[in-house]
Figure: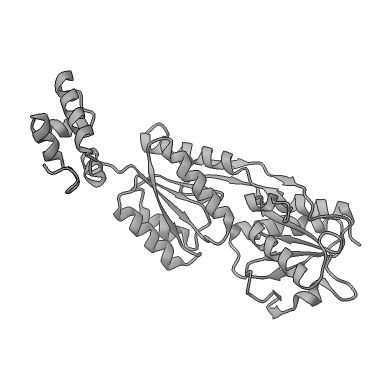
Length: 340
């Protein structure tokens, strides 16, 4: 064979090693039916030719793939990118590759993503956000593969998540203890259940001290803010005679954009405005951002979630879906201070 003219095949290895193609296949699959001396000849031929087994063919021989699918909602949000990276690293340690699909929360794209991953015979699925039509997705998967939700949950699959209500409560208490009374919550125009729960916890803790925060719908960076469906201007919210002095954003992505908005209209953080996010993405800890935020224990969530998924794949975990809830804590940095 002319070296480098084309990728080596299983037949090429068999010719160089002086064995049958089925013997090479047995060595590649790790079968113990091949004699030690013959195995060494085959391995030497593989090394000499640089042979790489076809992944799809190997999957079919084994009866299952070695790929884990990942579905997330919004790639612009660094939280999902960081979580996907952690999942990829965790499953790689167990010999699995990953396929990633982003849906932007669109129901049609969620269905397409599931269909695509099933067609590629993924051996398990990690879902990193709440689904728009979860029961439809459950029907589509139909128990064909194990599924785990991480930082989200559904009753029909294993899940590892956090107490979103608790996260909202500790933000409200932090701001109230600093002395803030004019509070606001900023969330997307189309909130998912995580956003709703964070808001519920925030409003509940604020109501305990007789406060009623303003609720602002905003899709950063270009969407206009609105209150009760009525468009408003950030200058009116953060300025005027009675400006909002503290804002809790549903996620760090929105909180960091809000810091930029405040800077653009001359509102100083934290001297005039305190801002709190949710997730504690890596960017939040940068000195120029220095964001106070609710920390999601990403490493622990991924480790527990992948452990559940692999347990299902290997048959060590059976029975009804498991739900695990991790604790959250507030990471206090330089974006919050007493009101002016």
